[in-house]
Length: 282
Ligand code: GUN
Image 1 (tube, rainbow, N blue to C red):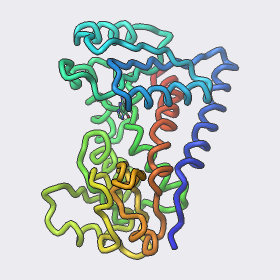
Image 2 (image 1 turned 90 degrees about the horizontal axis):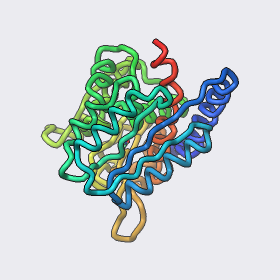
Image 3 (image 1 turned 180 degrees about the vertical axis):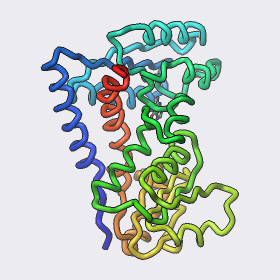
């Protein structure tokens, strides 16, 4: 029976730690503000943005909301970002993705000042991470490191396998595991012998985007298994990329879906907002 790594409990711990740091800053007269920008009315994005604002309220971070119509032009959005970059009262800028098709996401991500890039998506933030310099780290992989450490597992010297090479999860995940002195392999759709590679892993991070693809035949006895996927199954229940019922009996520790990785992303966003004060002082 595996240890269940509870993302709800760990994300609450992190938000409580952030809350304390925010109130210590407040005692010194320093307020922290996050600008949250939503373009259009994608239902999932609207829910995510609502949850981010709620987390700000909980931790004592001010959220300043910009809800823009679907037909906002790229130039208008870039103009808003420029204004927020130059506003000393704004510490973090979050532009919810995906953006409507007529707006170039890469251009928007690059327009955000790296000093306010609390999502950690700017090429400067990713570059800093890859050469071991301080900067903002993408929230989901940063949250996964916290899940692994706070569950009591060591990363140093361990075989770490990441399935998925996206810019938001897979690549920064591999860099973070490397920073923790793991021995890291990245797998993807063209990987040969995926099963054999996964079977070597002491720590297996799965971000493939295919429901229940990873069953126990991919997992070494006692491995820590982190499931980044979230899907709604034919039975209307949520499931991950990992077949939980198959893997749980062989894993040493495993994240459930829901309630594993999911809640960590917003907690780490709050953590990045509080860290922004020190980053901006430098
Ligand atoms: N859309 C889905 N996840 C994210 C995220 O972490 N940040 C932003 N900005 N948009 C998202």
